[in-house]
Length: 445
Ligand SMILES: *[C@@H]1O[C@H](CO)[C@@H](O)[C@H](O)[C@H]1NC(C)=O
Ligand SMILES: *[C@@H]1O[C@H](CO)[C@@H](O)[C@H](O)[C@H]1NC(C)=O
Ligand SMILES: *[C@@H]1O[C@H](CO)[C@@H](O)[C@H](O)[C@H]1NC(C)=O
Ligand SMILES: *[C@@H]1O[C@H](CO)[C@@H](O)[C@H](O)[C@H]1NC(C)=O
Ligand SMILES: *[C@@H]1O[C@H](CO)[C@@H](O)[C@H](O)[C@H]1NC(C)=O
Ligand SMILES: *[C@@H]1O[C@H](CO)[C@@H](O)[C@H](O)[C@H]1NC(C)=O
Image 1 (spheres, rainbow, N blue to C red):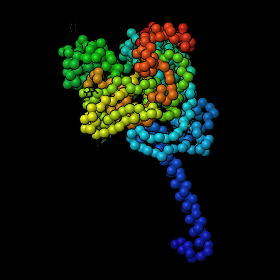
Image 2 (cartoon, rainbow, N blue to C red):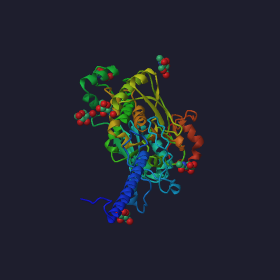
Image 3 (cartoon, rainbow, N blue to C red):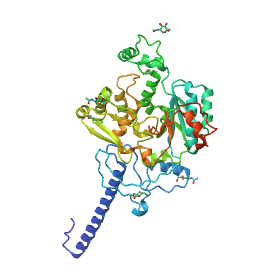
Image 4 (cartoon, rainbow, N blue to C red):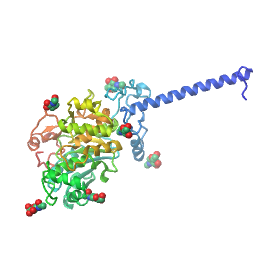
């Protein structure tokens, strides 16, 4: 039994010491926890977003390559404002409303043109007839950026390429490693149709206005050409778990008709990784969800997320700003939901492979096989808006101006219309001497 503190002089001293140590310990614990909480607040800028690795305040000293790789695995952000704040990042009072209004005042250093682990450049064609298109696009991207980075390149195709064609592509981007992967299961379209349940197959054949699947090809209109509908369905759902992507963490997506037009002086991948983004997109918005499709999509959102997106716009700083409501209220308001432009963006595969996200992609597709109206832009935009709006950023508004040509305009900006690519190239190739005379330019886009 301990003696009472007042019972003797020594006991009083001992009690005093114990009390002082207890206070110090309690204070230490308090600050440790508080620091932990602020770090988490920083990392969890999106309340619902718990998929990423924790932030570290400082970049560990890196002296050799294997250390560098290990460090990059764990570090998602480094702090440039440490000098004034003694190694601690300053956090504004956290405001975790889901309206995108958190204002964390953090300065993050971006190590431009630092080669990160787990990055892949991916694109898709339907088959050999698009070799010249994808050659043009990959060659320009290689000259604009990847010659310095040497990231792996993955070309998805539905119709296999010949060995010769594959080798031509490989040589074009060497020494970067290029792989060609089939984006459909063995057996192809006919087997996919045969695999459908009786009911789904009947609905599909009716849409194609035929009685039997015999004459259905990728070029059938059902409506919407099936090749096109498949790329949308593939990019909506199947891509995220495709084995060829399994070893990567970040995917730079370029449509095969997206053409870089100058050497990049900024590194979108480094920016993406430093800011721990879920998606970093060249342009927003392109197209929108409206009308009867909107009603279906809102219902599916409710099903997948237990909440409904009512509006979506940009915050000043260039990230997405959603508002949410009940299904009933959002349906009544006759809203339209703008979408992230799909032709060029970088996605965080850890985010898009989350269970809740994959569940959404499946819910979005529903029973419909190779349908036109539910597209990859919705599949990519909605989880970003729902789960990680502050980590879903626009490149131009983040200070990057890459000038990627697509459909006659730069970076999707309608007021930067430049016409067909061949004419544009004739007039402007001198601005891109690295590619001039090296890249085969045969497609107007
Ligand atoms: C690099 O760092 C790792 C881990 O600290 C160490 O095991 C390895 O020996 C180092 N390699 C060289 C070449 O210094
Ligand atoms: C971040 O950096 C900018 C430019 O260097 C500076 O104006 C701003 O005050 C910094 N913010 C913080 C929170 O340190
Ligand atoms: C058809 O279904 C079988 C069994 O589920 C599966 O192994 C195969 O990959 C499917 N084929 C296609 C083309 O979907
Ligand atoms: C498929 O096309 C061929 C040639 O056009 C035609 O003879 C045949 O009847 C078609 N089959 C079906 C099931 O429509
Ligand atoms: C939605 O709510 C149901 C029932 O409360 C729950 O089982 C489910 O996990 C929730 N889903 C999400 C994504 O929160
Ligand atoms: C709903 O919005 C669409 C386009 O935004 C518009 O054409 C239509 O008239 C609106 N309907 C109602 C009932 O307001």
